Amino acid sequence: MSKISILPESLTNKIAAGEVIERPASIVRELLDNSIDAGGKNISVDILYGGKKLIRVSDDGSGMDRDDAVLCLERHSTSKIKSEDDLFNIKTLGFRGEALSSVASISKVALVTSTSGSNTGTKIEIGAGQKKDITDAPPSPGTVIEIRDIFYNTPARRKFLKSNPTELSHIIGAVTQKALAYPEISFLLKNNNNELINVSAAADIKERFIQLYTEEMFNEFFEVKQQGNHIQIYGFSSSVAFTRSNRSYQFIFMNRRSVRNPTVSHAVYSAYGDLIPKGRNPAYFLFLDIDPLKVDVNVHPAKREVRFENPDDIHRFVAHAVREGLRPKKEKGAVYSATAGSSVYKDIKRVAGRPGDWSVREMLESAVKSAGTGQADFFDGSALPRINNYIHIGDAFALEVTRDGLTIIDRHAAHERVLYERLLKKTSLEIKNLILPIRVELPAKEFNIIMSYKDIFHDFGLDIEDFGSNNVIVRAMPEEFNKADMNGLLLDIASSILEQETTGSRDETGKQNLLKNIAASLACHKSVRGSEPLNDEELTLLISDLESTEMPDMCPHGRPTRIALSLDDLRKMFKRK
Ligand code: ADP
Ligand code: MG
Image 1 (tube, helix red, strand yellow):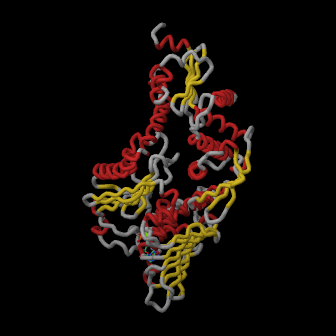
Image 2 (image 1 turned 45 degrees about the horizontal axis):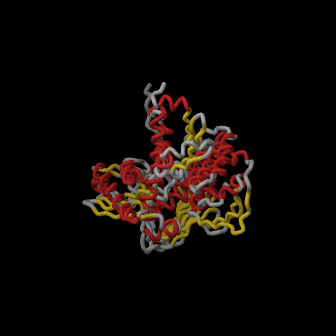
């Protein structure tokens, strides 16, 4: 008996859907692509319950006549390519003809569409039985497509969906991406009838950037602009002072398609080189336009990856363009000061990362060298007899000399550890009500995340309220955060929550990890910025606070807080033993 059978179409569609549709945001992305390809100028997206209940995308594009409307839901139905030649010269966002059929196979669909000249429009509904129901509709030009109950017939996949706020964040991300790539189109996004994104047609990417984010944030970026053969790049990359703790805010658009591409991102990092600390990430919005013949866009079912014909050329081109953008700043001196700070970081990281590779002496040398300014103080000898006093090395380290040796303390890391444990234990935190509450305007995605976790922040002593239009008001916070950059802090924390929520489990361990992550980000943020000098008394307090933590030798991210050299170590270093 034969073992092989051809799978029924209902099943092959579901298999295809698995590749294209991971979550509600994937559907939003595909529907937006279609509306953009159809020439829509005003596109709106309505969401209920993070897209799990409903996704509705309306556009004022070309619409479809009845025949096309019936066909568009079939597998491999497309108006965008006809021949193999077309496949290697793609100028539209879609071309595989499987988005709508995939969506229809795992959800309930209602499509209303009409072309501009026609007398009647068409409505097509596909319910639970997957049967198409076709009726007349009013002839209003454009298309409205409603997707309900995603994965209703594939419960195993439904299980993988995350909480509504997390799914909504991915949707906000998808709309943000399209809005960045198409500034000339107006986008409206609503969740449960709340407006989250509302951007009218903009003149250029800069204007769109400011609509989506803030002018304040835009000012942290420099322009990248370069013309090559068959390729050009345009966009913005962050100044070395505006780095992020993760890779959110890294956008690459290739022929206006948002893609992930290791060649391009590696080129960007290589342009920054040592200018930003290890472990921090630049933010960038880069638009590459490249001859469609020189790039293959058909390498990923959801079209999120591309393959370049000459990746080495692309790498060189992008790295050069970003480096050029960075350069003018250097002359103003801004980059230099940040460089000094960053080398300190790098050395800490090296000391921390591979202790086995380093002799004690190298560690000491490195710590002293990287700190820069404190060298004279350290070596002129007069400093050494000071017992139980601190010598400040640069703005990162303090050196404590005792009769039995010496300890180098990374003030930032030490402070981070202390604050982290206080936040988690909710002890010794002094909460301050702010006389002047701080207002922070956030991008829609981060706003959504911060507001949905406001109870957790409250537990950590941060009182955050919704102030409308993606603004939050911070009314109270732990005394320690007095001088923190609230904007940067909330942005970073939102990204780390989203990352954790997306990759982590939803059980108790997942929850605990999330709490720890938030505490670590909070602690880090306060401490990254806090490079104001401490006097001896404050340092003594910090060190005794550090002593009383559970893990005094390590900051929450695993870097050392202090390195001690005993007399014995010194004897060994000087070959007296
Ligand atoms: P693809 O976009 O890869 O062609 P889809 O399954 O997404 O495949 O869509 C199939 C076809 O349906 C498209 O090629 C297009 O002709 C038509 N279509 C889909 N959405 C719209 C829309 N919003 N407006 C007009 N036509 C549309
Ligand atoms: Mg499509």
